Length: 113
Image (cartoon, rainbow, N blue to C red; front, side, top):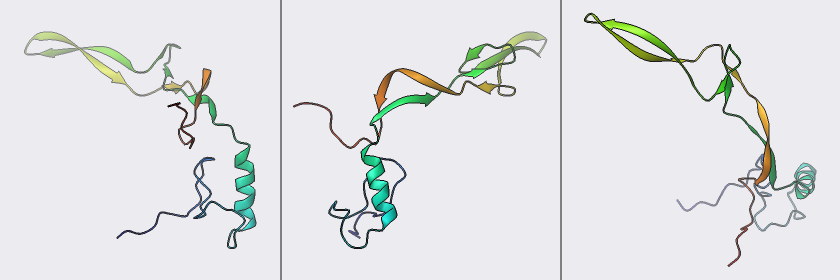
């Protein structure tokens, strides 16, 4: 109970240095963590690309989801149902953003009071 926070190194450039008081020159900090800190100082807080959530189907159409209309006969009545297609879909891939957005882990408050 009441333990201190984790001091492990994160993979995100803005996740923090892992040292308690923020001074990376203290004893116990190895060369690799110092190199990591130096490289993250030049990292940009902006995101210029993202992974798309759209897919291409067999016909080359682009959409989030694809459905196929099927006719089901129940009690002598024909009824149309939509069946979701999940096979043979190709993801659109990485797209560039028109306007860059700010990275989620950027540690600075950007509003003015």
